[in-house]
Length: 338
Ligand code: 13P
Image (cartoon, rainbow, N blue to C red; front, side, top):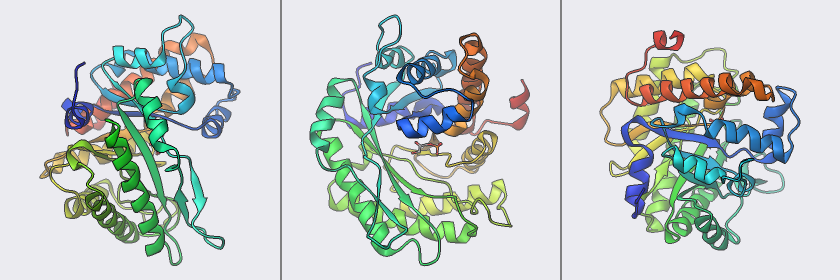
């Protein structure tokens, strides 16, 4: 694939309903996922699981990019093929998580700021040599009493913009991920406000840093009710409020918005994406960059057993196709039974 400019890379990843498979769980997070199916999180098991996902037939045509963790971008399959080459053979671009996790904003704070700017330029050079074409950095915004604070939003969005500039200077497309956490009993209105403030700050900082918006992908959370709120917004309301927030804040020239799933069930994440694309009225591609909502059925089917490989791959292929349909606004719940 000869994609030379940042614009070409970003546009390719979200072309024709394609989205992103987020498979960049850190080793501790992967350990939690494996605990749920009683599998030990060893380097070999992580490799086997991800190799199985990346070889699934449904990667082709439905997945334009795969986000990897540092360990994975260096791994090869049992037959010696690098996982990066398996991804490329499926027509997807390899990406890499480059942030270094979360630290408290200050000593007494429940809020966090993402780390990882130190040494980022050198890490980018190595990842380019390993085949990465795009990157991810996740900022975490919590809703609660007095949260999010302006200080938390500003520190995180400034770091995202600083990261994006370094990544573009190294010829890769930055995904900027401001995740407003679903955890909590807050209303959809509270989520709208936190998302709106975060996106305003993010695009101000990106512009101040001279980041090329046409060579950037936004990975936001949807505007939803808190996960433990008594009243849960409907699919239609989530779609409308999310679009309202994005249209108010995201420049039309941005090529793609790919949502995280953030703890939504696999079907709900698909239904929300489809509802937004059925409403339409925006110029960016609106697609997915799901971790759990793409992988959960495949993980449950696998159970760490080689003989479950095909049903696990089928489960991933199905979710990838369903989300492509949703990115085209052509999904229907009846397709889930076929
Ligand atoms: P989830 O879709 O499971 O939220 O993961 C996406 C991701 O990459 C979070 O950083």
